[in-house]
Image 1 (cartoon, rainbow, N blue to C red):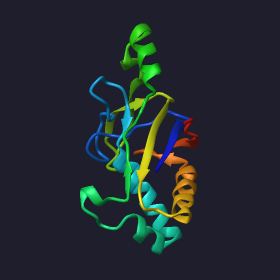
Image 2: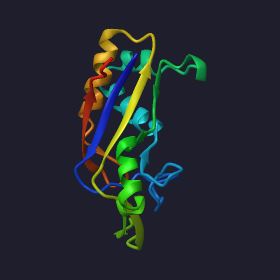
Image 3: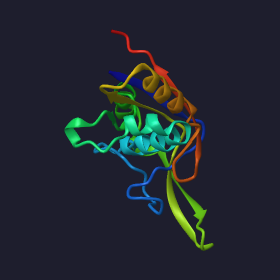
Length: 161
């Protein structure tokens, strides 16, 4: 089974390479911004544990790689949009550098991505209807993401098969 979804950022955002102190935004090999699937899985797990510990145990049990019940794909820009960007503008126009104040009051330059919509999917097996509905609800309840809690809107995309 699969849940396809999109995350539309309502403001600039930053998800760094290698943790909360990273200055560079995660990107694919072509230089386009991405969100690692493991980050979405971590967010889902925290939210589902708060709502229903038994469901969380069923969904996120420590299985081996081949036995995992739930796998999240990396979120990326739609391939048609990438093609348009390649033909018209450079992918680097998606990002800008801003100065932000750190906890220790020092100033750090951080790369932000302009408002953008990214697409991803959650693949799962052996998950019942209740747990599937819970995953969809929690996914759509995500309204902030990234190092600076950038506002976003998550929408489930109906697969046309």
